[in-house]
Structures are given as C-alpha cells and as structure tokens.
Amino acid sequence: MIYLNGKFLPIEQAYIPVLDRGFIFGDGVYEVIPVYSRKPFRLSEHLIRLQHSLDGIRLDNPHSEAHWSQLIAHIIAHNEGEDQYLYLHITRGVAKRDHAFPLGVPPTVFIMSTPLPPPPQALLASGVPAITAQDNRWGRCDIKAISLLPNVLLRQLAIDARTMETILLRDGLLTEGAASNIFIVKDEVLLAPPKDHRMLPGITYDVVLELAETHAIPHAVREISEAELRSAQEIMLTSSTKEILAITRLDGEPVGNAKPGPVFQQLNQHYQAYKA
Ligand code: PDD
Image 1 (cartoon, rainbow, N blue to C red):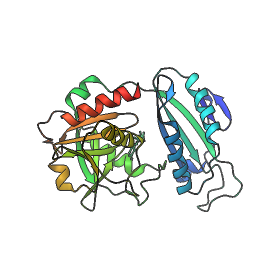
Image 2: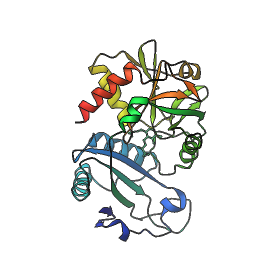
Image 3: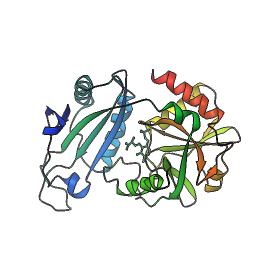
C-alpha cells in the first residue's frame, strides 16, 4: 500500500496527472528512510533534511513532523517486511506548464515502501569496485532533489564498467558518490569531506562519524584531494539502502590490499549493532 495525496491505495491504483511539475520539470524533493524491525531509522534527522530540501526549493512543508510520523507508521504497518525503506516524494503540484511557481496549488505527496534486504555477505566480504568521474552536477547538491538526471547518467557509467558506484571529483576534490557518500582512510585516520553545497548531507554519513567518535576511531572532516583518494588505504561508501560497503578497486586499481580494511570492519560491526 502507498500514500498519495491524502489516500492510502494499492500502487496499481495510484496515478498522477501528466501536468504534475515533478513529471514536467523535476520540480520536487525526496527522502529515503530505512526501516529496521518496523521502526524508521533516524526519522527526525530525515525529516529535518526534508525540511532543508523543501526550504531549498521554496516549497512549504505539507505536514507537521507528527503528521509525517503518523503517515509513515501506517505505511510501515501495511507493507511487507521487518526491514523496509521508505521513499517520500513531494512536488510543486499540478499546474499549466510554466516555469514560474504556480499560485495556490497543493503539492503532490507520495510515500511508498520497498523491502530492504541486508547487504549481501559476499559483498561485505569482498568489497566492491568503483570508478571515478568528474562531478558535473549543479551547485546545490545539498538539496535532495528529484531531478536526478546527472546522478542517473553518472551512476550508469559505474554499471557500464561493471562496478558498484561512481565516485565524483570536482575541482580536484572528492565530493561524494552518484548515490552515496564516500569516506577514505589515510594514515589510519578516517576522513570525510565536509558537508556543504557540493554533496548531500547523508544521514548514514552522520551515523558513521558518530560511531567513529563513540568508539575512538581516529577521524577528521576535511577536503580530500584526488591524489589522496587514489592513494587511500581504504575507501568506503555509505547510504541508507547500502549501509556501509568497502570499495576495494578504484578505476581497476586495488585499494590497499584490495580487501575490506580494518576501519571498514570496525565501522560495519558498530553500524550493525547500532541499527539493531
Ligand atoms: N541516496 N549522496 C547522494 C547523491 C545520495 O543519493 C545518497 C542516498 C547519499 C547518502 O545519503 P543517506 O545516507 O542519507 O542515504 C549521498 C538514496 C539512498 C537514494 O537516492 O536512493
């Protein structure tokens, strides 16, 4: 069952008009929230980021935090699986095609749930390959915008190269992945790029830095150069749907000894314990 504009429906019965501004302009924002044992993970942090995205596109939040929580609880209860991930999507609504914001138009609000399997053991054990590409996205990558064409094209480069992710470089600096945040380990220190307009402020990114702090894993947030990425002892990606994965090959070259490293192992263990 999904939620669309005030109604709970089977997905087969959910339709939106072709003039929806999400369809016409990609004019909207979204969230992806993991659900573990039927409890949304870090819900208030996701709703705060949603508010940041809505503010970024100057769209009023259609619901209070309490109302979002109710809708989400209903969707979780009426979908399969102890572990799920929620997709929340809000557009500027349906209006005659005109770039200018329409006046007095209600937003389109959509929530769906998908089963969330744990990361496959084989991938955790071997790590995954990735490639690099120039980050040719816009200047507000901190907004979780539904207009994802650059991310889609960049991600497809990874698929075409039979790898898991495309790691993005802008002006010689690491930004993030096409659909994930990226950490490296250098001189035994976990390094993360700073949260700014060049990357999405990941909720999993925050959890990883908190776990590093709690468990006394040396860490720092600072800009990371392309040379540091290419010579890293470890590289890892994080996202709500992939959790933490070690990247063991970059552009065909081994990362460290091409096996998931000790910092990844520790963080993943702590993450698994934390989410439970
Ligand atoms: N994407 N950066 C980008 C560009 C992303 O699309 C995502 C997640 C992240 C990680 O953020 P978080 O830890 O909050 O999931 C970083 C989601 C999963 C998606 O678009 O499906």
